[in-house]
Amino acid sequence: MAKLPQGWVECQIGEVFNIERGGSPRPIKEYLTTSLEGINWIKIGDTKNTSKYIFETKEKIKPEGLKHSRFVNIGDLILSNSMSFGRPYIMKTTGCIHDGWVVFRNPYKIAIEDFLYYLLSSPNIYSKFSIVATGSTVKNLNIDRIKGISIIIPPLKEQRRIVEKIESEFAKIDEGLEHLEQAKEKIKQYRQSVLKSAFEGKIYKTSHWQETILKEVSNKISDGSHNPPPKQQVGIPMLSGQNIKNGQIIFDDFRLISEKDFDKEYRRTPIEENDILLTIVGTIGESAVVSKNTQKFVLQRSVALIKPNNINSQFLKYYFDSPISKYYFKTQERGTAQKGIYLNTLKHLPLLLPTMIEQKWIVKEIEKRFAVADEVEKVVDDNIEKAKQLKQSILKKAFEGRLVPQDLTDEPASILLEKIKKEKHNDRK
Image (cartoon, rainbow, N blue to C red; front, side):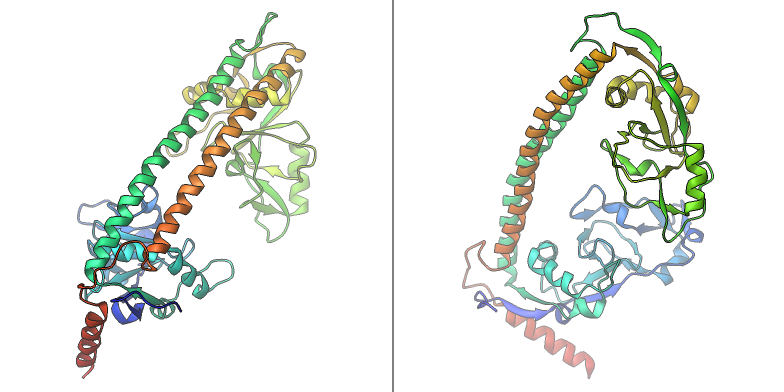
């Protein structure tokens, strides 16, 4: 190991922090409550729009659930120990954590909370978490293994200087990231503008476009199975709406059904090249064209199958992506808990139809303009990735003692570590 910066000390996590695992009252549904007396129930989903702090939770549990769980306070640091393991968050509220979390208690105040957050976020520590994580399909962090991980701790005053420098540098990066995200949004808006112009006849319109509805240009419009067959360990994919995204058919996280059930479903709704898939339940309006080499599959009811007739498949797919169709879907959707549109509503989707030659020309023109947008977006994405890597580089420097100048008058961290060891020794007597 490289020589430690002066005043820094190496120790194991378990020597200076108390690590405790969360717990879940079961069955959890019986403990959930909307009462004001409820205790915040902290879930991974509560971190969706945050990277550092947890301010609130979506759910609460009854007070009697506390004895089956683990209570955390404002200022405590919690760490995910399953699935997306190794992600730290600082609590800005109180609540209970389930067994997918561990809490770092800091009774000896050897580290300030922001320093600990950045330390555990660093690539140095994450790589150590990755090594000790267990499990084949789902990785987990065992408390004893977390306790055994070695860390290096600088003096408290230097910790504050490190945090200030990290946050100063991150603020500059975040400002750049904000501009890049704004650029991505403008690219998205540009694509919608291209599609709007295309289907209003502003890109190409020399002949009279025919007013029609979707069922008049389709041989068949149907949805998938309303009663999916039993799941199998092996078999043939039955896709749902979550498998249609960004113009692609995603063969990931789907139901498998038997060959016999597949044959039955396929006879009812055969899926062929150039058919179009459209999500009609949940996330409405995602579409994809079935290509020649797509593996065989069938559908659940959240996806509609459209067999085009006298209309170019890609032309119709782009029409589904356009703000014209999106507005129609939005105004026609039904349902409260889960939004959806009826097949009959879909069949009456209005559209203006040019000749087949014009359809093909419009598709080429859209794709040409989209290709330019794709190139610009790739540059933006590359810069976003570089900015994220720069953050990791800053953290790496910070915890190698290379980010801020040292002040040799700081009290060495080893003095506090010795005090902790003596205190623990006396407690055991």
